[in-house]
Image 1 (spheres, chains in turn purple, brown, orange, red):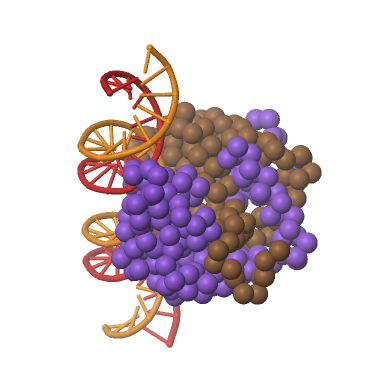
Image 2 (cartoon, protein in one colour):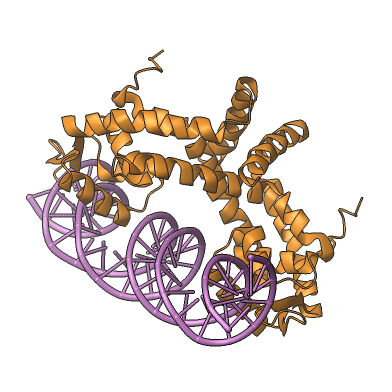
Length: 153
Length: 153
DNA sequence: CGAACTCGTTGGATATCCCAACGATAGGGC
DNA sequence: GCCCTATCGTTGGGATATCCAACGAGTTCG
């Protein structure tokens, strides 16, 4: 067993690869790829899907809200919504009480796409967690949720 | 409780944000930021640090080996090694038995930087896992390790 | 020897992130 | 009422990360 107090440069990679940040990064990359491939069947990118889903859940939403909730740059949100609107999946309407804002809503076509994507995304997630038992999946989700909540508090 | 069999588009975001891929992605993003900020004090980017560490551990390595081990595109590896070599942290020598390959080694300066970065990276990882008890950290690492091993098998 | 492969390298495409500005609008304090 | 600050959507520019395709040089194997 090597010393933990004075890092040994010769085993630095083993260090890194056993580090939580590295592991979670690799797992996240794989999950990203799985979901990305899955919903590509519906012609959507990852963030486009997330934005569409967020719009569906929160009814009429402003773009700034979407940006904050999904941690997406407002600049990029413009492009994402432009694409979704061009595809006829969402609609930008003037906000009734605040003329600065846009009220983004989902179209029936968007809902349909989202329904199909939901199944695909869940399949991808199931594939990611395939090596774990149902109990272990709950544990993992609980742990990740706590890390995420603290970070976004 | 909503149905899990027929995805409900109206709660799709809650869906997404409670999905493993999303969760692990957010946690990974935070961890990435923490480590990135930490080792920025030594003037290294994330992947530069990883490559430096891998080079230190595996002695003389070829670039293709580094790319495979760290899941980095060979194209990006060129740039990373160029930077590290310009900084005098690694050395590219001709491979003795295969003239296509480069034998990459760490310089004493690289070892010194790596030693300091190791401590910084560990501090960043500790911060990421701060909300968890030591037992929970072990659980998380064990679960992530299994997901990662299966993926790279 | 020739075919298939690997290696390092270059080029290009795309996505994400960050910073800064702008006109239009809203809200609070005077 | 009027100003001051802040927010919203949008545009612009740039830095960075990731991925795919190709190429010449070199290796390996039939």
